[in-house]
Length: 358
Ligand SMILES: NC(=O)c1ccc[n+]([C@@H]2O[C@H](COP(=O)([O-])OP(=O)(O)OC[C@H]3O[C@@H](n4cnc5c(N)ncnc54)[C@H](O)[C@@H]3O)[C@@H](O)[C@H]2O)c1
Image (cartoon, rainbow, N blue to C red; front, side):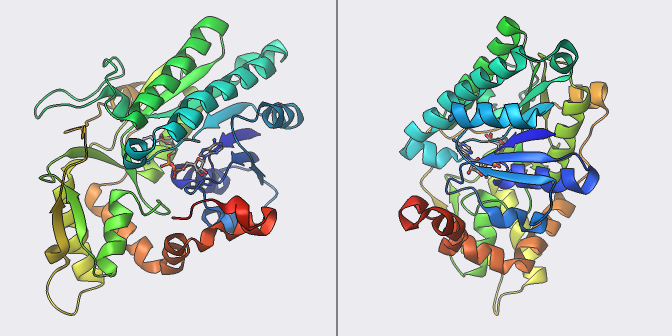
C-alpha cells in the first residue's frame, strides 16, 4: 500500500493510472479537491478496489494519523500543492498554507507514525516529495543546466513555497532520520492538465478561436517533460533512490514558449484545421509576468547514471499525442472549463462547499 497526496491533480492522477496499470499494490489517495483536483481524471478506476479515494487536507493531522494507522502504507508520495505561478502572484497565502504549512503538518504526522514502526518497516519506508526545478531560480542563455547541487534561488511565491517545503523535507531526513527523497522536475505536459497551464490553455483557446497569450517576448525557455516520463522516473526513485538524496528529472527538451506555441499550432493546423489560415495568427504577446524566470534547464545525469532512467518521449511526439488527447477528450475539457467537474463535491457536501470554479 502506498499513500499519495494530491492524486486527483494532473501529475498525481497520471501517476495513479500508470501505477495501477503496472501493479496490484493499492493506493490511498488523499486530496482536498481544490479547484485543480478533478475526480474525472480517475474515472477509469471507479469500482477498482486498488484505489481508495479520501477527500481531505494534508494539514488535517487527525485524518492523516488515522489513514496511516489503518492502511500502514510503505511509502508516502507527496504531490499535493498549489501549483500555478500566476495564482501565487495574485494570492500567495494559499501557497504558504498548503505547500509550507501543509507539508510541515504532513511531515510531522508521518514522522510520528514512522517512529513507532518496527525497524524493518522503518527501514523500508519512504517519503517522496515532488518538487520543481523552479526552486533553483533562473538561468541565462548558455549557462549550465541545474544539477542537484545548484543553489536555491526561488523567484516567485510558488517556487519560494516549494523551496521552503524542500528544506523542511531535508531537515526531517537529517534531524529525525525519516527516509526522505526529493525530486526536482521540469515543466510537465500531457493529458489531464488543468487548462490554466500553457499547453492545455493554448489548445483550448486555439479551438475556441481565442488569442494565445504569450508573456513578454515569448522567449522564456523551459525544459518540457512528458508527464508519463515523470511518473516513470518517480517509480524508479521510489524503488531505488537513496534516502536523503535529491534527483533532477528533465525531458532534455529546451524550448521557448514561442516555439511551444508554434509547435502546437503546427499540429493543430494538421489535425483540426481552421476554416481559414493558421492557428499561428492567434498568437498574441501580452505584458510579461512580474519576476518571470528566463530559463530553466535540467541536468538529469544523476537519474540516468544511478537509476537508469531517461525520458522516452521526444518533444515532437509528446506534443502530437497531447494535442490528440485534448482533441479527443473535449468532454473532459468542457467539464473543467465550465466548472461541472466540481459537482462531485457539491453532491457529497452541498453547494456551498464547492468554492471557486475554474
Ligand atoms: N505541473 C508541473 O509542470 C510541475 C513541475 C514540477 C513539479 N510539480 C509539482 O508536482 C506536484 C503536482 O503538480 P500538478 O501539476 O499535478 O498540480 P495540480 O495543481 O494539477 O494538482 C494538485 C493537487 O493537489 C490537491 N491539493 C491541493 N492542496 C491540497 C491540500 N491542502 N490537501 C490535499 N490535497 C491538496 C489538489 O486538489 C490537486 O488535486 C506539485 O507539488 C507541483 O509543485 C509540478
